[in-house]
Structure formats: structure tokens, C-alpha cells
Length: 405
Image (cartoon, rainbow, N blue to C red; front, side, top):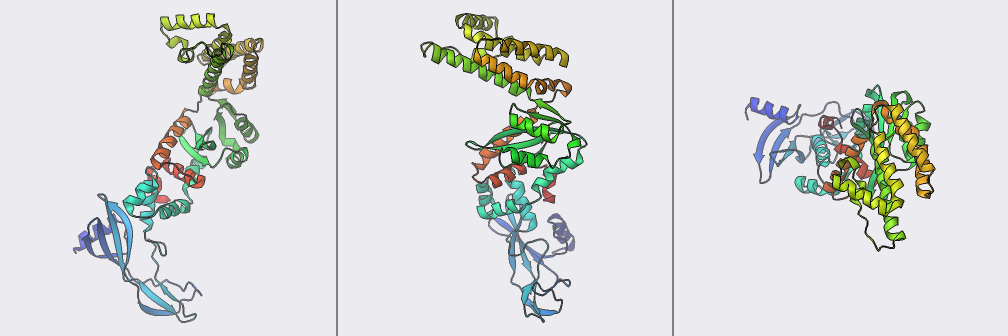
């Protein structure tokens, strides 16, 4: 084989220090025969002695290295020296930096597995590379640097605007995702939604860097943020405030329909959840007729629409006046549910108004949850939460990070 061609293949495949002696194509793979030089720095793994003698050559070893044009590329390694220690009599074989002992994949191939896992299922990778699920899982779980690569964004950032949200891992089992909503980076996927787990992670973040913490209306998140970042603003994502209003509106509609009228009437749902400004003239007229027919819904509809006005305010002072008016009217209501809603808005008044400082939202975190759903679908579900969190984190690593894992 020409030396120039040999050198090009060596560079392309990252085989510096190896000599390519031959290449051949098999049915579904390429095989590259490589020769290794004896390692003069070897030591006995039993007694660490350097006093040993040659004890023959190891059998050729065939290992997976990469993919080219959809075909697997194997290395057939020849020339590994066997040694025998003069002190303890231990026989051992020359180890190579590009492959772990007794592994059938090179280090490069293991990084390839991790890269494929970021967008494929274990089953698809097993079929493509002809490796077992157990092997792919082992590679994933032994990749200790995955969380560190995500958390490096914490060390690099001067300011952090944290986003915290939860999503379902399996049925009612929830996990947390932590992001930097301004830098648009995922920082961590926690294995559960327990307050202790969240505080353990947040406590590792320098408090002086955190300027805002954007959350939904979950009291545990606010307690953790106030406890660990007393100087940071806690912001309630405006989407969750409006979503909570819509939920209360729909609950009132269902009570009116199923309890007060015992299911004898059908009150439309969607028309009450659409923003009034987005309704046609006929739609607004229909809403007014329904509210006249079912007056118990008026207070909920009024509060829902006024909350939308809060987020259209020009500044924080105007928003505060509108929000205080809503709270005052709700707390003055005879309806117990409206009164409780007023108390809820009063408790969350400052985090709601903090939105107007920087217009911070949790939209990026919600978008990450959408990507998580996609990763779950292509993985056909995952049972082990440790495997789940690591595989999800792989999906958010930049492509250039995979060579450093």
C-alpha cells in the first residue's frame, strides 16, 4: 500500500502510531489490518516491575472502530507483544491507548455510540452496530463527564437566569430540568422532583451569579430559590399564570354544567378559553349570552381576561395596579373558589410582577420539555431513571462536545 494513501487513512481514522498493513472489504464492513509497536514503557500489572521478557505475540484482535457510508469499520490489530515478569511470573499482554482491556470497541467507537444515543434508541444502535443493549448501556453509564459538560456553562457564565420545570419520566414519576433561560443552555436533568434533590444541585451554583429564577406556580421551587439565592428575583412564568386561570375557568364551567345543572346542559369549553380579543364579534356575543345565562361564571371569566391585561401593561407599576385590582375583587367575592384564587394571586404577587424587570419567561425550558418528549418517543420509553437522565442530557450536548466525553 502506498505510504501517502496509508498516512491519509491513518489520519482520517485517528490511528497515529499504528502502521496500516492491509485493508479489505467484507459483506457489510471494512476491515483495516494494523500493526503495533512493542511498548517499551510497559510495567507488570501484578508487581509493577519493569524486569520482564518477551513471551510471544497475542492473537490478532478485531474491534469496531467507526462507520463509513453506513458500513462498520473494524480494526484487526496485529503484533501486540506478550510479556512474562521475571519477579512474579505473571504473563500479560501489551495494552493500547485506543481501546479498553477486553473491550470489542475502540474509544472512538464508544464515543460514536454516545453520539448515536443522543438521537436514536438503544435497539436501533444495537441493530446498526451489532452490539448488545447491555454494552450500549454500560458505555452510557461509564461516561462520567456528561453532567460536567453541561454544568461547565455555570462556570463560564457571569450571570445566570435559571429556569426550573418538571416533566414526567414514567407515569406519575416526575424529574426536574434546570436551564439557563437567557443563554439557552440545559444545566442538569435531576432524577426526581424532591425538594432535597433540587436544593442539593442548586447549592453547587455560586449564589452571586444567579440573578433570576423562573418557575411555575409551585411553592417548593420558590422556597428553594429564596433559601439558596436570597438576592435573586423569583419570576413566575406568565404562561403558567394564564394556564392556571384557564384551568380555574374550566373547572367553574364543569361545576356549573355537571353539579349545578346535573349534566342536563352542555356548556361549551373552548370559547371560554380563547382570549376575548381573538374571538369574532359573533364569538364575543355568544360568550356574553352564556355569561348572562350562567352568572356564576362571570367572576372567573372577568379575572381570566384581566390577568391577560396585566401582561399587556406598559410597565411594572401599571401591572401592579391592575393585579391589585384583580386581587381585591376576587377577595371580595362570595364565591369560595374566587376568594381562594385571590389569595393565591396575593401570595404570588411579587413573583408575577418580577416578570416586568427583564420580561423573563420559561419558554426555553418548556421547549426543552418538548424535545425531551421527542427523545422519549424515539427511545420507546426507558425504565431506569439513571439511564433516562443521562440519555436525555446527551440529547442537549453540542456536537463538538462528544469528542471530549
